[in-house]
Image (spheres, rainbow, N blue to C red):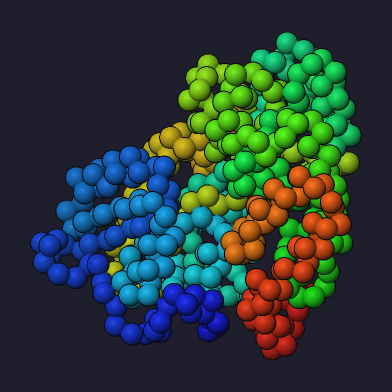
Length: 429
């Protein structure tokens, strides 16, 4: 049975899901046809989804599809949830908001959707792991993923004969070699706080348990214990970047890297379009952050960048599934991953961007681990904590603050975990 949610969105949801809702499929504006509305948080893909909406409506007689990709979709969704005006499908990332929506029973169980058979198990597992406590059912259809590691200037590497590192010692030796030749090894743009998370996540997935946040919620460990090595290596990276990494924005860093001012850039695959907009001819490849001293201990930092979730209030689940079938057609998926430099969550023979060549082995084998920050509440502002950390370089203070503030911003989740464990036992056993 599906457990009753503790409603972390109670500040947003002022009535239960069982009350009457404003259904987008009702009324005359659609000539008696079923109306399916998607609210999609990928605002940068607006043109792509506008074209898809037009194509769908030109080829379907019984369903009218509208896709809206607004700025700050998360805020808009929450406002609509308060008003009980639920869209039929939401397109969101695999992060803590998705966890909240499952717990608040906003999302429908789509385990009966046949298209799930074609989704890579690794991404279904990532989605399941985001549940605050184990919850029967499947609540998202993973669509596209991204990856964070190290982008590098392939031409520069070939010119100097530099080899791709597979361990932390090899990586540091490479940075030393690059630096000795008067070239900046690493580019950073930490003026934009969110970029501080990219190298942090890429290291943490190698060096800390994938479920460290859940372990802390169960009182089994601390971040001071599990994050120390990642924190120490994170600060070590700063020795090979700009003198003041906080002085440069994300756009500054992308531009500098595009102009050949650094050999590598620890960032996600999502940065490639921005870099190529500055230098369309740049020959970029990538590799997995080799945070471990053992090559077998490294994993690709990859998470669900976009998934489609049918809401529990959707009045016509069958029509929603027909829309999902359209979105999951191979040619439609290929168009998206080409347009957004993404990784498909669907099984199939898709052509990935050449900038992902160095990560292809991990993608194909499913050796990937979700972003640690997908479990961090936004109110905790870990990106800001990391920005402070790179300035004061105080490992102990960073870890102490992480442990001190975690219970404050996760008290409801911790309470729910305690209640679940008391009733069901340790879910990790």
